[in-house]
Length: 87
Image 1 (cartoon, rainbow, N blue to C red):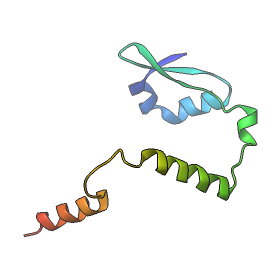
Image 2 (tube, helix red, strand yellow; image 1 turned 180 degrees about the vertical axis):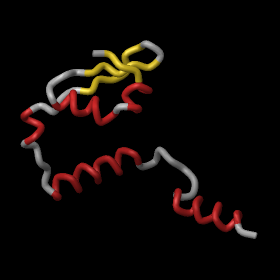
Image 3 (tube, rainbow, N blue to C red; image 1 turned 120 degrees about the vertical axis):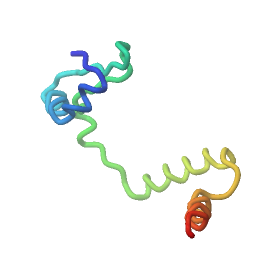
């Protein structure tokens, strides 16, 4: 079945229920397929990750992103914006 992003947004729980029952839904944007909503595969239901493995994955992601951003941390930017917005 094909459905636009707008239709899926308006009836999201219905589409999730249908996917849970085994139906595959192709999501379209401007009449072009962009994504697929599918049921969870049985092997994915049993997949769990340990806390240690999760932290290792998170560390690897952090390392892969380091050096891509420059400037002040986002937290500092938010603080500066809030100070500037005061009277």
